[in-house]
Amino acid sequence: MSLNTYKAKRDFGRTSEPAHSRARAGGEGLIYVIQKHRASRLHYDLRLEDGGVLKSWAIPKTPLNTGGIKRLAVQTEDHPLGYEDFEGTIPENQYGAGTVEIWDKGTYCALEATPAKIVVELSGRRLKGRFALIRIKARAGGEKNWLFFKLGPLRGNPRT
Ligand code: MN
Figure 1 (cartoon, protein in one colour):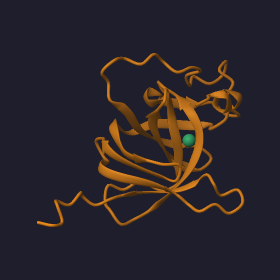
Figure 2 (cartoon, helix red, strand yellow):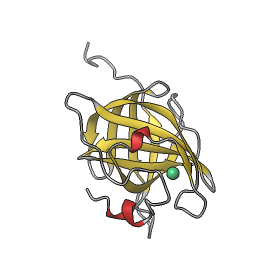
Figure 3 (cartoon, protein in one colour):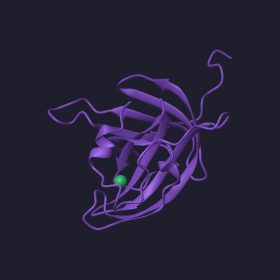
């Protein structure tokens, strides 16, 4: 888990984005946030706390709290803990120039995590329930592409 890529892309003398991960308070749940980012192209940045950073994916279309519709989610560089509170304007000529607003925020539990599949239970204001991130089979250069979508509720014991 490194923030080297995150730091290399930004000039912290110009952008007000955080340069370092904040300290973690004991007892808080794992952070989940989606930030609506009006950059050169509007997208939604999904971030999930993992190992002291926020794992991040850029979703070009509005995430949905209903099942059945899969959204492309392109994995991006890890972001520092604390970025979940960032809102504001990234200045022109800076990486990600545009406005950022918190679109959804809450906590999550990891139900499954492999290199190719992550299942989480989201507790946000907009997105609630089980969601999957599935890595799309890599063609050349495509290894950052995932699908993000809502799963149905867990069924009871199928034998009863
Ligand atoms: Mn973004």
